[in-house]
Image (cartoon, rainbow, N blue to C red; front, side, top):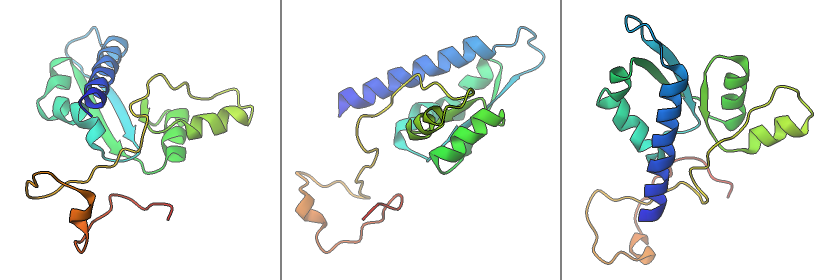
Length: 147
């Protein structure tokens, strides 16, 4: 798990550096506006939230707007229409658009996860947690599942 979180942090750090390099405005009097669409609020995007909260984007003269755009199809549409410059979502919508033979399609350049991005968290620390420990407890799902 530590390797996954470290890898995610590295990917997001590289993405922030790339964004900064690409959108950096030479005129320091005006911030460069960058709109980011994310398909869901996720712990995987924690480095982005921290950078925003601590003013790191401001330090780089960036005005970053982070918007929740539920659905990879909607994130893809927002990027293709130019409403946002960056979209965080799975590759399924990109593949769908590409397979339809469209001339204008997205190019995915980073993979944040190989598995489902869900976590089981608790308000209280539970030593030696086992999945059986949630039997009879209420569990709040982060989003609708298939089953």
